[in-house]
Length: 156
Image (cartoon, rainbow, N blue to C red; front, side, top):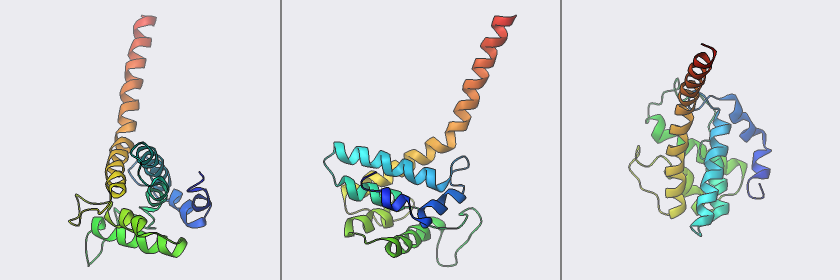
């Protein structure tokens, strides 16, 4: 919180709570998950935890539904890091490292590779969190079905 607390309090970051990100999470929840998980990994790897946490929080700082908005100059995977970077630069001063993290977090879906290990951390954590957020409701439904079956067997 020491690194991202002020950013979390801004109207811009709070507005991310109004957008569905990965079907069952908001963009704010996703960004917090990416920020915190990336921060923990960066600390373990003696990387720049501050830049990683901040850029992890700001990596998806855009305000449109990515399933509906289309761009003439590129795909959402290409455009949204650039939009997020522009929005983040208007919100706070960014280091070159933070800029690279935000701009390159879609590597794999985009061509330009990250320059720093912190950028790779956020890139991989972003993918991990997205998969986890999409699959969580499926996992919960499966667990709930197992629980209901056990309950039915006990009452039979």
